[in-house]
Length: 378
Image 1: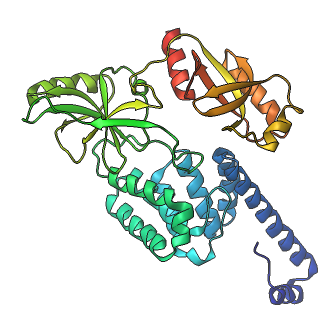
Image 2: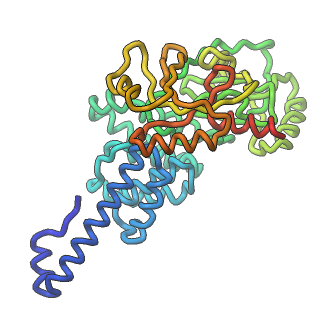
Image 3: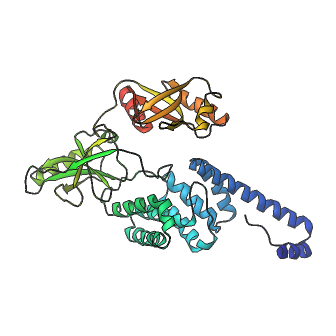
């Protein structure tokens, strides 16, 4: 932490007296205590709470590089104001030597990764590319860094590549920046003709999603390129006029950034995704949705900490999901009831407990469950 130097204290005592020095020390200590609280929220994957604290600290010191850095990271995690994020990170970059290692964010060199994200969301692909070059230079100089944080480099390259896409429907930064453990099965994209084929691209994403994500659309095919960018396309038309008609219909459903593509482009559509976690990417949610609170997930060997949960929490259930065993609590029909139980567990000290959704024994994302229930209610 930063403290007033001994020389500064002596000077302030001589000029202003002891009372002012003590007040200044108290202010500094309170400032950095709040900063540490913000760092803790980020490490606990609660960027929203960190923003509230960091905004107050930013008002007190708009030029502090570490406040600028963490505020920029928190804002981009929740998907807010890419232009402001870029400005905050540029201030941090101008005082790079003063940046600290932060839990949940990592070493200062991760700044370049977050700058890539901010510039991509702004559509400033040239600056995104420049930030990628700087990130690559870090990995070239330090092989240990490459070994521990390679995902940042891989993901940064994906973002920079995706920045060129006319359709820029980007996912939010994942809570835990680790390579997703998704089993993606692909096959070579086979063409029905040697001539150009047209489709309508509705999205390009960094992480694969079920096609049910696209409300109001069906018959969406998923393709992935060698950089790991997933593209979602409707149609396989011989005539461009047919694709144009489909484009008009897709835009009328609210997908105003959709555009016509040549799906025989082997650079962008070389592989077709046929399964995500052993399910078709076109599979839909059916039946009832239930919410549970997940306490832990492990493979064959149960960690000691997880075993002790049985002595601390009532009504733990085990669920088998692929090669994982999940420890969950509760079985709620409404998200609100699940949220109350999760908050209760947080107060008991289980800060990593979080809500998961299931339908017919299959785990589904909370957003997919929410959208499904809205449509079902309508």
